[in-house]
Length: 352
Image (cartoon, rainbow, N blue to C red; front, top):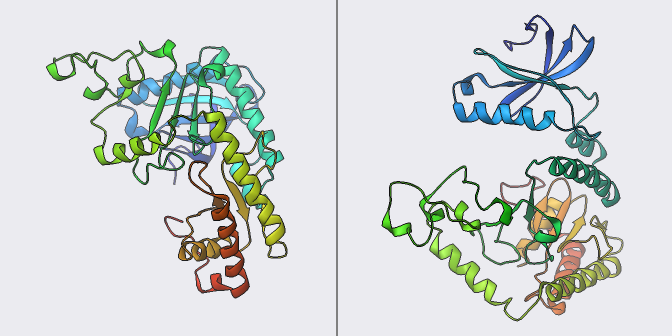
């Protein structure tokens, strides 16, 4: 049985049940006997209580949340950093999680997803205005969507280079750091983040490069970097506005073919159709998505599957032709007509 359930912390907080856990802490539903209200208590994992780095992070988290007051951010009521136990007492919001909601609905439409996203961004803006560093995961949009990090006043951003930038599996990731943070030391320092002019002098002290390169650690994988370097050559002479326009044309054409050629086969389009909010791929939904995805791969098409019923189709704006988009839909229609997907398992593999 859980060692905390049934206990009372500091004579005040009665622990009732475990409601969540992560790599750093456990979260319990508890009752505050003084204020007569339910609260959520986040307790640092016992095995981390002697780790100075995790203690610092845990305490910084409580300080950061404590300065915020926003309807989309839970409040911090109390903290305790004793010798035996470290915990944060927060507002308890009764209900289900977003993950549970999505599982109940089976799917959520883009307008609902946009509604949730706006609430998250409003909370982030509130935090950013109060000096809390906020970053973006640009994920698969890099190379297909025009991002202006300076206009967004983003603190930092990360992304993967394997998709639209064609770096392939294992490609080195990318990092943007706002200039105002160049003087900050990296949490994980490596010799590749040292100043270029003294890097090979192997001095005993780390000399942080005052640019985004200062957050690099070890030597980048040469073969992976070569693939990205070659792919970036294809962008020479192009603006991202031109790349974005081409991407929108390709996905618009793909959606048109899905609507006209695949009507009656049980497909729906789950992504936004409007250019202003559509990304670089089409989210094709079907009850048999797992098996159809496998059949497409066997037909020499490279899609990927996302739970529970989405086949992602991502035409590259740099080299995918309209003829290839048409051929994709033709092969997909043939798969449906011949029922070729039925010979595949309906269980998604590790890499789908």
